[in-house]
Amino acid sequence: MPKNVNILIQQIRTNNLRKICDEMFNVLESVVVSKYPVVLDLKNRLKDSGALGALMSGSGPTVFALMPDEFHAKAAAEKLSGETHFCTATMTSPVGVTIT
Image (cartoon, rainbow, N blue to C red):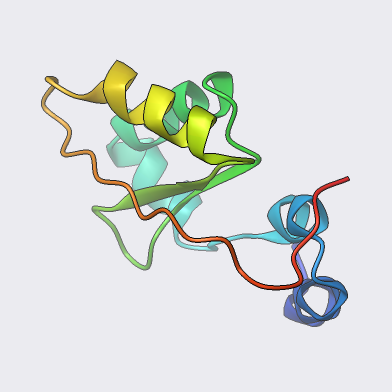
C-alpha cells in the first residue's frame, strides 16, 4: 500500500522521531533503486548502524539517515567514511522531539 503524506504530517505534529521515521517515503526511490542498488545498500547499512530511518533525498544522489543520538551518528559516519560515499553529519536536536 502506498504511503500517505497526511499520515506523515500527523506524525510530524506528534514530534515523535521514531513515528516520523516509520512514515517517511520517497516514491521515486523504488525506480532509482532498480537502476542504482547502491542506494538501497547504503540505506540498509545506515539502518544497521542504528538509524531510525534512512531515505533517498529528492531524486538522489543523496541518502540521509535520522539517528537516535550523536553517538550513533558519529559511529555511522566513521564506519562509512573512506569509501566512495561522502559522509557528513549534522548534530542538532530539534526541540520537543522525543524518541520512544
